[in-house]
Image 1: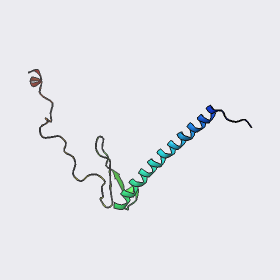
Image 2: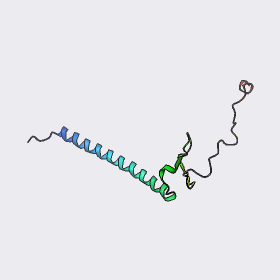
Image 3: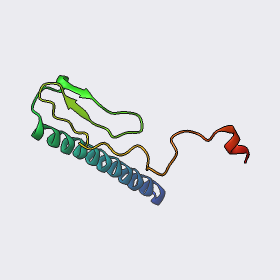
Image 4: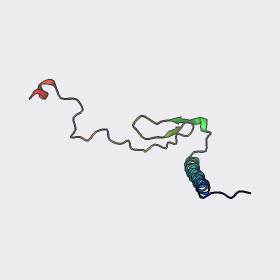
Length: 97
């Protein structure tokens, strides 16, 4: 039987490290999904079909249960703008001065 060259051994070791890294990433992602599911289920045990997605573009991610009203969104919505910022663009006359 022919023995492997050093280059072949390095390729195999690199492949194994790559596979291990991929498995580690998958296990981490799976663990986070399981943790999220556990947190959600401790507060609401209704079927997933009863959950209404309340995620908005640029806002927090979350859902609300149609049966019991439980929500994963924060109770106090963040303020839209600080009070010192204007809510409308400046008028044309203000821009020219």
